Image (cartoon, rainbow, N blue to C red):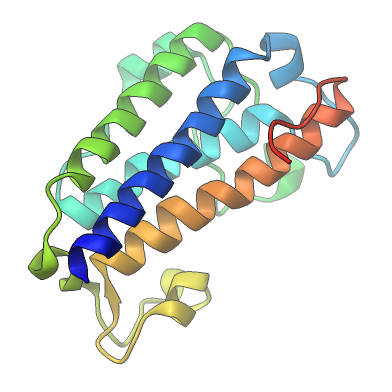
Length: 188
């Protein structure tokens, strides 16, 4: 059963990442940085937020430091050097990516690292608790806190919530925003 769960997670993660690769390959910087109106986040926000949150979550799941650093910031040239999780929409509507090709390289590095780590998972690892009870305030109100069992949030919960489900949520935003910039959705 463990092999089935891990195999499914690996395939779903690769499929979701492939949607992001398809999205970025069919957009340009004008699409990504398009400002629709106040209160509507640009695609640049969703792309960077999700990729950087996956990068940051990796530390909790594996103990490996995030890839994002000042060198990547210099290369990608974000308008706001923050994933925006705890910043208001009024601030994050100003998120822009300066060098889209460099962003795509960062995205590829993060996604490749996650997929490589998923190949190393086993039963002991997916059951390991990464955040136990009581949850800290920054976690207590999250979806992953609702998913976590009596023992707390496990590695499997983290991959499912912080990376997979979170990624699908933002892909939905990206697909909707693509319509606002004259591009279509990517799945049916």
